[in-house]
Length: 450
Ligand code: NDP
Image (cartoon, rainbow, N blue to C red; front, top):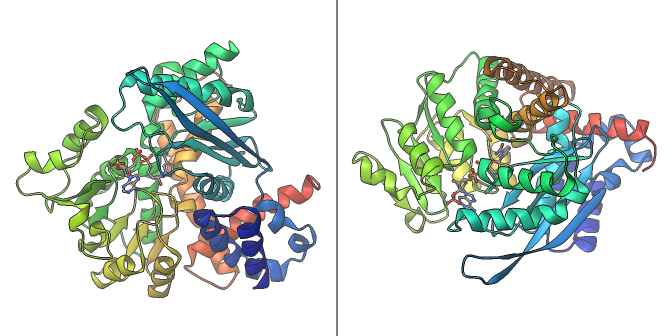
């Protein structure tokens, strides 16, 4: 597969020090081989090289004043990767680990994920190395206002529609929306994840987590199995993790773990969802507090995790839902999950499993739902929010959730049928990558060399 090698070499030369981006690109490109062999049009149109190069990358300074009157400076990013299928769509991440390479990996994944939803949205991603943790509400507001003071000139409801991601929730979207409105004088659907009273969609908060569970249900149903009564592990304790846990309870499963960057909780009787919401959504606190209220639960700080492991994946489970961040499941974690009898992994986070971990899941033949398929419910529901904004209407929760369920079933069917078509039944990585790529590539060919 010289094209994979050549493309990654080109990326390393032209965009140095972006390891996460090379990892995401290599995974997709490797899957495409059977398609490229079958259909020479994609090579002739040089689609691969066009696809790995963002249409536009915006880097900017974000200067703001903290509560002590000190001037702070952060980096701001928006990568508008591909608009073949619609306006750029993808979240904003505020986390100290954000670099150009992280935003590019997320933006690249987003292209194919968005294509898989079947909805008219292109791929983009943005963010900042700003850390909202420990900052007061007024500091977060001043940062968001400064960030939007540059971003507003690049976005719009038919141009580029950002949403939330790590570190960007309802509070941040509110401040960003307010500043956009102030600068442009327009009240329009330029961001998704908005508050319900000012243009948000019912069901958007829950969508990514719920969707990841729906995806797992679809995978298991194909095998004549279900989540009912199954012990499940979940990592993270943010938006995706919380609503994954909520839906797991609704379908009769038992979610026994959650984590944050400080450590993890193992509660064998099942995570106390109300307490988790109180700690994370209301108090913005740390998970260690959970164990103070529940004597039967164990809190393990990150420094006490078994060497070489993310502790969450050493808890025996039948289904695992990585919902924190990239590369949180390594080869040793995958081996441990399989050894303990895990039969299903459905990824809520983006690129949570390393390439070696994915190989192990595929070799073991378990139900493995890669992120760009399994967590696409979030962006799909964001597009439903855009539809409601454009038609100045608001749908019921049942309407949105019903559509989400149908979209997740369609994504699963598309990935599964594409894997079958290319002679790799059950390989949803290959199925999702080829199906997403083919849709975008065909649109790029139709639209000419751009
Ligand atoms: P949140 O900010 O709400 O929560 C993130 C969670 O992950 C927190 O518990 C956080 O812990 C933990 N976490 C973040 N970074 C690290 C790290 N480096 N090491 C350990 N733990 C970490 O984000 P979301 O729940 O929205 O996002 C989680 C994942 O899901 C991300 O990969 C995101 O890209 C993906 N995703 C999100 C979507 C959405 O709709 N929100 C849609 C599709 C994918 P702490 O608070 O201690 O930092």
